[in-house]
Length: 257
Image 1 (cartoon, rainbow, N blue to C red):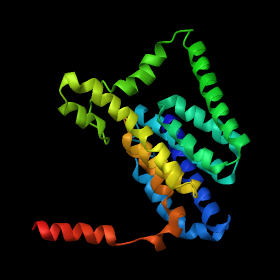
Image 2 (cartoon, helix red, strand yellow):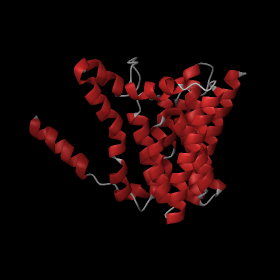
Image 3 (cartoon, rainbow, N blue to C red):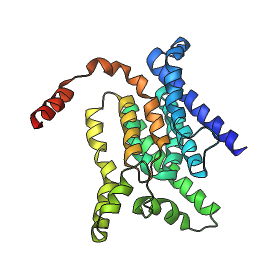
Image 4 (cartoon, rainbow, N blue to C red):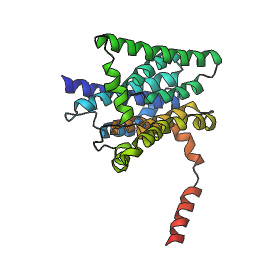
C-alpha cells in the first residue's frame, strides 16, 4: 500500500508539472503535451520517487515534490491563498522554501497582495508549528529534531549536496562560523534576484527552486526533479543565449595550455 501511494504521488507530481508547463507555453492547449510530456516524465522519473525501491526518507521527498508541483500550478494560475497554504506547509517541513516568498511578491505586485502574502505565510507557518506542538503532546522537542537538526548539520552522511563534504574538511573551532555562512548563503541571493528578475516571476521561481535544491543541508535528487521539469517553460529565453561566456572559458583554457 505504501509503495502504491508513492507511485501515485510521483505520477501526480509529473502530470501536475505537465499542466503547468502547458499552461505557460501554450495557453492550456492540450496538443502541446505530445511534445513535452515525455521530457517532463523522464526527468521526474529519473529520481527515485517512483518504484519499489523508495525508502521512508524518500517518501518525504515525494511529498515535497507533490507540494511543489501544486504550488507551481497555483502560482501560474494566479491564486494567492493556495500558494500561501502550500508554501507554509512546505516551509514547516524544511525551512528553506521560505525564500520562495520572494517569487510570490513578484507574481502578485500590488501592496495589498504583498502584505497578505507576508502575513499569510507567517500565520500559516505559525499555525502549523502550534499544531505540531499539540500533536507532540505540548512538547517542543520537534523543534530540535526538525529545524535545529537541519541548521546544525550534525549528520555528515554523504549525500548529493555540498554541505556534508565541506564540513568533513573544516576544523572544529571554525565550524560555527562556516555553519552560519552556509545557512545565510541562501538568503544572500534573495535581494539580487528580486532586482534582476523582477520582470519575470516564473523565471525567479525556477531559480529559487534551484537554489533551494543546491544549498539545502540534506538535499536529494528529488529536489532537482521539480525545477528540471520546469525548464521547458523557459523556452523563450533560448533565443537570448550567448556564447561569450563559453568562448571566454575556452580561450582561458587555451592560454593556460
